[in-house]
Length: 190
Length: 85
Ligand SMILES: [Fe+2]
Image (cartoon, rainbow over all chains, first blue to last red; front, side, top):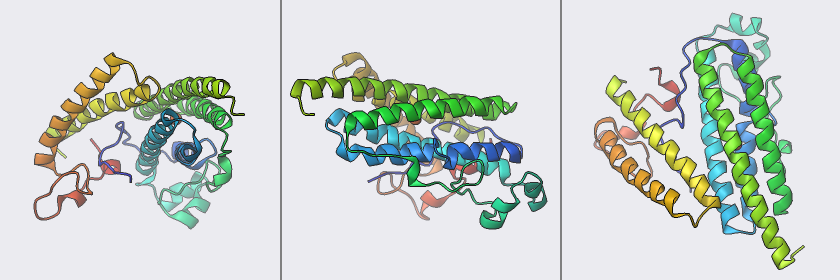
């Protein structure tokens, strides 16, 4: 069961239309290293984790990623909601408008739709946790690139929050990876 | 959305963030007493703040987690992505 709470994890203070930034932000909404990939990856991998700690951690980080997905969706929504079709066309979003109007569709910054091929679940906890740590670093890098692409204080503020969360997730996954490896060595189940 | 509602949402957001951070920390440090105390204190504060908020502004959650007067207040706007303040 999942429960939806009618509140963002972090406020999104975006007041202007900025189609170029909206397009770049799609990277974190429907791209390979997006919040959507992160959420689906962790919530998929948790079934085959060997420890209760790892099952809990993947459930909780996976759930937080969905809250981040909502923050990015909110940013894009606010950045494009008042745009005209002509403005969208000028920012090379004419194709997007044709297919999706002003809906918030999970595609990357180049318009390529999200796919499960972006994620892996191998059933090997050491391999999966390594993938998760790499994914957190890739998301951190993407956020750093995005922060450099905007001067808007509201967008920067939310992106800095999300970047910081990737650092924390990386740390927690690393701690769990060490524990899982210790236990595997102690039990010699490999 | 008035300023009092906005301020309450911000306060809930802050406490929830503390709770999220402590949840992840406790997942990998389940035997540490100090963060657990912080977690329990945060949960308690969050509970009473949410109850206060919901009394005036309607449910934050559906599925039976909070009650609603008539008409059904869960579907009242603004939704989180529509808040402009
Ligand atoms: Fe993350």
